[in-house]
Image 1 (cartoon, rainbow, N blue to C red):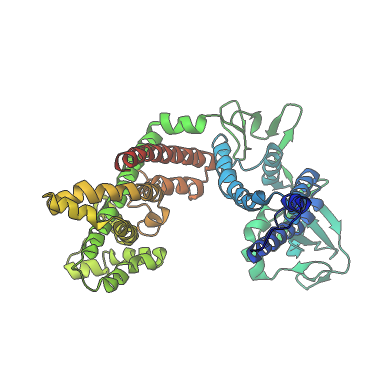
Image 2 (spheres, rainbow, N blue to C red; image 1 turned 180 degrees about the vertical axis):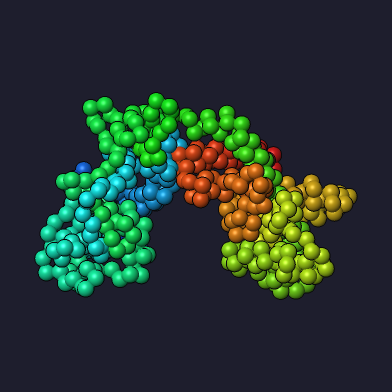
Length: 524
């Protein structure tokens, strides 16, 4: 028999010796990946911050880079090495967008209110520039100096070329001028061709070149004139004066307003408090739109979830029966709608519902405008969503059914329960305990199912008296049209509606999860 002859000192030293840590390949790869991404972000973001002299942002960026380097180059803080990337992405892609949306909801951010007051004053003055009698006219050639749009201005009398930018004019030597006065080549400037200049027509029209006597504006794509601003800002009165009167700054509205309550088109971004939220709840027209869309939104989400769940569960129960044959073939065929790109299938369904050449009308021998009437359009989008969504419910229900012991249903049958009673008393409650969280998430998804509406009906059909709100609009498509529609962007108001959407979904989800916990306690 072997004896353990270790000395007590050796045993104590072994007890004090720290456990050896294993360094896995995955850990090394993840460390290299995180450090590489952090270094790439640092190298990408640092030069622009230095160029704009944003020293505080640069200091924060460097401090974050140093902290990440210290964290991943040391053997300490092992849990933090795994938690930090997820936390950073959570903040970047969840917390920051939510906070930005909420803060935007308290502003008048939108068309006419996109920048600060100084930018509004500059836009008002530059937009009011008018040619004065006897002012110079130039032959205009648009060009690019780097990424900056510039004017190459040729004096018709002297053929001298000057360079015009948003900062002013400066002499330009070495330019080659053609017979018509157009600049053919210029040092340091890429001359735009006629098609290229036409593509940038809006930028060329918006560019204002300040001069000591006024400003130079483009008049078309080949001519520029020097004029004076008919509206001038005066800091002493915080107002804009012009031939039409005086407009005084109103900080509550973010506009320059005259005595008659009229305001200039260009304003600036200000905090409006709860005005956007109050507008949703107190304006009769907007409140009517909002409640109507909300009611249809709830119907669409509930019908989509309950319909897909009922159909998916029915198919799963049929294939789960022990006497069923060729279940693999059926399952492969049933998940095809889920495997195909939804955006492509939505466009296909839109064409199937077409009144003139749609397959549905041709098969039924009718001439129904399915997407042109409110009732049939709503029924159509629900059916399309049902076809797209039931394979998912079929898959999750199949997995949940396989986890339910057959002994439970067999025991119910022995006790005299009919198949429907066994399903209602045993199978369905156990399915709901497992699938209720998925049903809640499916409700939240369908409540904001932008693609299902935008790619089939685009929110329509629209009534003649309300071109902004359609019969199939969800709150998310209505919000999108407010924020980016042709009628003018209202980002602050759209953000307020987004906050309402978030609140509604959060309340419904919280109530549903509470009921789920009660179910789990009953069937645990």
